[in-house]
Image (cartoon, rainbow, N blue to C red):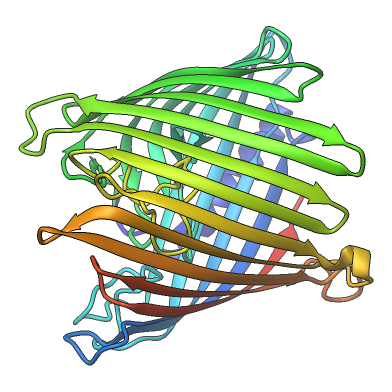
Length: 405
């Protein structure tokens, strides 16, 4: 996709809104503008080639979703546009993922992107063609920097049977989080393709306390992947207990130099009471390669955290996490969690490697008054690893969403 100017973003939004009015499906439409101010500081803890990545940027994220035209077959359109503006950067500090740049070149002062999807609804099933931001266990677009990741392709959601959700689709190109271009889809273990196909779904039963999921996906000529998922929640007195088990089986789907044969088990146990939630996670990444997934997406594994994913070849890792909702303590809108993940059993130059990450996350959303819905989030992480550079990281995110319709 060519570079999109701020004027083009406004024109795109105006066309979408006027078309919706003309077609008569504006009544159910929604539109919002999110302002996202993002400061990122990653200290590599040594005076090497790049001692830190530090940047500050302002993002504008516009999203609009129409309703559907009347009749058995309803038609509609979804529109997304994003603009990122550099507030502070430097050649020696660039490459944080906030802006369209890299270490050694702080890049342009701004970048922008826009996309749209045509959608059709028949009964309780919806087909979308165009720009997509899937949030599925087998492929979930990432949104951990200034602007979200998006794909182009087609998706079909079928919900004709109660409690059964079936999803199918094909992703063709990707727009990465700090880019204005659409390009082939990369895998985290190497290889790229212009086709990612998926089919699967979930079924809820036991009064919706239990959900099972089955998924199949392939990044054509790179890898194929099967996922089996079980989620269960169980009230016990004042407690709510939970388990989330996911098992991935991945293999080759082409003639890539790197042969893929990998199985990953991800298990989360949780216990919540009042404002407190306790979690324990276990992850076993068993294979000759690391766990494969689409680059910059959010894989459905317990130990994918702020910096590391603990999914190296043969790595085993454990997580302990505690969440606190301060509403019960008289401060609604304030939430915090702390977690610690440790991994080992992976190879580093012929010896067993170890690594750990500690995260602290605090967020507050204003509940009323002039600044209602203004949100502030501080994310702090520390990484010590035999396989990568030591890292101390801080992210400060100020966001405000404006409902336009």
